Length: 308
Image: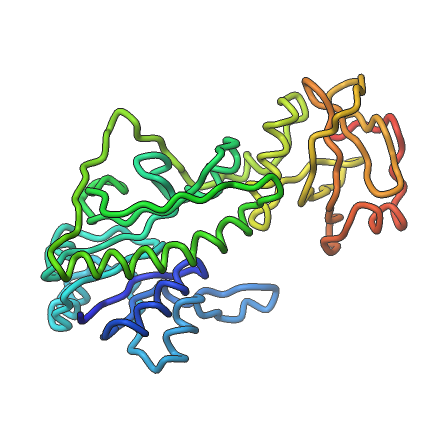
């Protein structure tokens, strides 16, 4: 099939790679280049970098719904459009262009976690499983009819980053199977149960600050769900301390939520509303990510200190 691919972040790259092997990718659409870092150097999206490696035609419209770009898509006349974490909403006019419609690869087991951050929310909420769903795109947010699903166990040591990496590969395989079924006319089309729908909105800055008055499980899941982006943090003596990884502590500590109740050789322990957590990986303000024991070799951590 002739495919137009729309995607932006690293999550979309394995699907693009799989499509190039199995189908004719006539064009790639991705978000415009953005300035990054202190030097504000213009950076390509992960999808653009991969597309250029393959010598594919790349389009980067500011607004995909603009009439001039819609005309470009019509002239490309794709059999199907594949969308993976593209970052812009497609108009109904665009959805109606391809012969077989627009197919989305979404990082959740729909109808759970519709929205921008499904993988992060599945970890933050302590779900047992994450997954990927392929679906026919419709006008609503991630509300189209489902085609195939793949379930993936969320491991105890999973972070947003590790689950993201696995689901990106699972999603690529699922998309190829989906296209095979569509080509043969055997693709299922299962409407989503609206009563079971949940939202996965973008992570806000307010969410990044750890609330030590919360339960230990919730704090650990938040830390894992924001690793590696944007990373949860607390204040230690008035300075931001990012916490990359923590585990629930089994010992029976007592103290005030946010209080450092133990300092050990490799970590330190912080009290929460219903138990304690052991902080394993941190990053000082202006510093680099490191293990907690490495951090403590250069920074004094005192028992009784209150994190805010």
